Image (tube, rainbow, N blue to C red; front, top):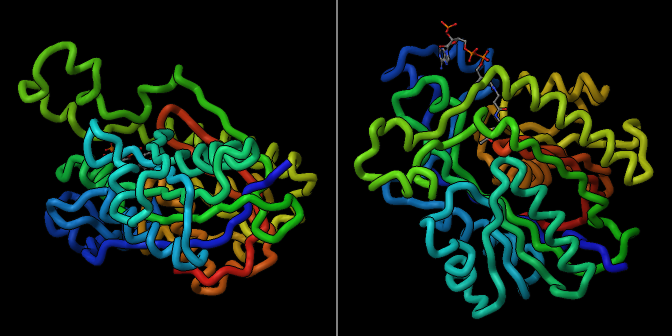
Length: 334
Ligand code: ACO
């Protein structure tokens, strides 16, 4: 059976920065609280009027260059599409000069990139596509309440992309089995209450009884507990599916939601500091962009090397989660 093999990678962070000091200047918070509770120092954010597609086009262009060009399908993992209609991926494809190839959005919150990898692997295995550009991009700062200290400190905007081509399972860059899960009984832990068909059917969105309903809400403490449990379970399952043991994992690439969650997952799996990839201090939680951004930035700074066996895991709204394995190939990151 054909496997999905990484042929290129790219990343894009918007230039505008928001530091902990910037947040402290207008909110009742402190650099010490943010660093000790989250591990974050600075985030990149889109300018007013900027959108997810602007980030995705740049990351996609860099991944295509890194892979030597060409894609016959584009998938965008995002929770912050430019519009409810149309989907954002066709616009990205057009702006990348890729013509009329199939393109679609995929929504699984912070686990979106893993759901995307699984989808791309299936599309390649069945011969539907030969070279797929998978982009994880989110502009979460457009969705959080700027005055809610509990959420605004957590998120940054970014896009990361991989070009996956058809290849063999034993090639460097080959993706292993992707393990996925979801639990809709806990949907209320992470949500934007308004803006979807549920609230639209109740009346015009411009007349929300509570305007705060249009913003992102999260029960942080409960989410924390489930995140550690689910990412650890999925990681063990993905490692077993690859025929590896946890000792075989060279690098853990986990969704950068919170430094304390990351150390709890790493402790649970026995993957200590020198095997953990992290960019949370510089970019914060970038949702569906988190995994590809971390892969690309780590490969660029040399903490992720060709031949490294990588364990990926993520968790987010839905609830949705997953894990996967891959061997990092020798690619020049764009
Ligand atoms: N500065 C100072 N104090 C704050 C801040 C802040 N920025 N934010 C919250 N607090 C206060 C709260 O008001 C609360 O005060 P109280 O005790 O007087 O009520 C206190 O700090 C503790 O609040 P908690 O929410 O219990 O703090 P916690 O230690 O749990 O940290 C955090 C909060 C960082 C959100 C953490 O729970 C977390 O990271 N959770 C998981 C997030 C996650 O995994 N997200 C992934 C999915 S996201 C997605 O899918 C898009």
